[in-house]
Length: 507
Image (cartoon, rainbow, N blue to C red; front, side, top):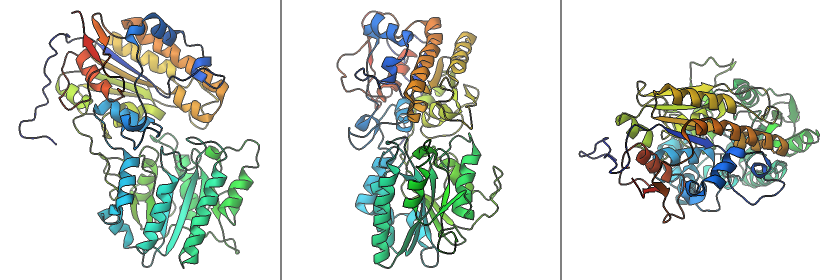
């Protein structure tokens, strides 16, 4: 919180000058591990990154991008793009969605909040629909949280429950959907033994049904809407377990891309349509792949696809997915309140910023970097450029993605002389890697390395002369980057930011 004495003005750094152009290149999904046949970065041709590491080792260091370093509950928790970019931009470590939901479920406070009270008003006559990713990956959702929510909602009055599942195979191994469905079906059977009408109603693979982001392909959301609201899907089954097992018999099947399906009764009627008077909760805690569905569920004026029917429901997200859009307007757990991000500080200190990526990561170098805030802080000081991603195909088909175009945009921004900071995200390691196609990921990593070469060729590698990485921060993480960048722009960081990674040894 900002007190009466607060000022956006940053103190000048005593030894580092202003006026330098700083390039910030995020290689999404890139890390360091032991070399083996499955290490795509090791296998790829990466002369740029190799030369930086081997040719200037004093300008190279590793930092943590997982666990408590990015606000997750334990160091066993895998990092992800959302929490990583939050930490990069915020300069501090905030408890993230998964941790906030864990705390709210453990304490029972989730059932005392305004969001739950809002949906509870539908429990008497309506159905509670739960929509989200069925997975224990901990990136977008977690199975144990769904299990606790089912139990708690039932104890607080929900007597008719329908779950609309999205299979994973991206943050967890492909094929695990069968086991997850078995676990959920067992839990629902126990609820039915207690007199609660609880069933799985529909499903589909996350990348083919519902979980698109940044308005890349609204057809993905429409497939989910048609199944969940209209009961229309190319496949209909008597149970979700039968559905997943049968659809996975296709030799090309993958949990991420399973087609939409609807569960029907003996007469062929869908068992769980979303109707007037029902309550709906999207139980993913991560925001980016829920925003589009949230718009379809909440916005009365909507033109992205023909909804055919717009049920009058009580809808809440697990969290609020977009703080700027106030979407959804009701939510079960309050999201982290990230304020005073590095981007906002720099704008107030006359730093002109350029940010660019392709659609699938554009929100990461803007929305997530800026503390889950949409839009510009100051349009006169910032320029955000989105390069449209390929749609209608999986990223292993075109593993080069738009990396070279992003590199070219970075080059043009640097050479224009208009910007003090040029910030880009190269998505290949992450997006192609998630397909599980090793050969395609090797290609993608090689192209990302080629794109990195563009800003390096203009400005040289790493740190300026007389500046080195500190050796007293062995456990530094992504949040330490913000103070480091402020120093390179000629400013001291705010006192409550995580420590800078650099020190001046010779001015």
